Length: 260
Image (tube, rainbow, N blue to C red; front, side, top):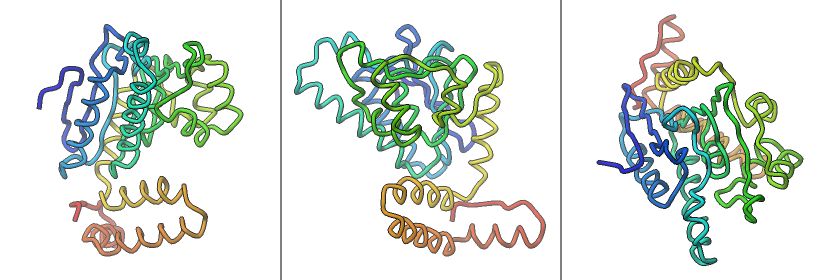
């Protein structure tokens, strides 16, 4: 399907979703949020898609925040609906069941940082700048920033970034656990592609099991989380991919996973 603000590319089993509003630093407006919902629904429904890479066009920004011109006119009722719609998108990405990698080559601010934090892995270039600057607008993060930042970086960092609103560079974001890796700007695409290819070669049911066990089980108590892990482990043991993986190990060859 055609999109107004997104570019969709396929590289084998890797789906690239590119937010394409470079003149607005890829800011999230209603249209873009709605299109991202559709794009991730499509990625979830297609078995051939094993990994998703999310990026921003133009080289200056991943996503530089929400579209301020839209925010300025929101009523409280509109703001409630916009926040819930954005939070639903972040939950959809987080629970996609397929790895989603954020390729952050510039600014990831406000809704952009929230979008990145909903992805499972985040690779930043040395130029990446991340922050929750909503306090300067008389707002707080509305797409899950307070909660995911708390879980990724801890209370002290979450309060600092949300109360002060100052962006942090890629190095500090890596130290805090917000970024998984920082690479030279010119190496960002190559690094992300290599990571996506490695994940795409893994068994899809095992990938989903890891994602579910960590994301869903991690919100439970320890015993509930362990029970969830056990069930996911048993599901994997029922797949052809598990037989292939263990056989390949014993035969000292590379496994060829089929997704069955």
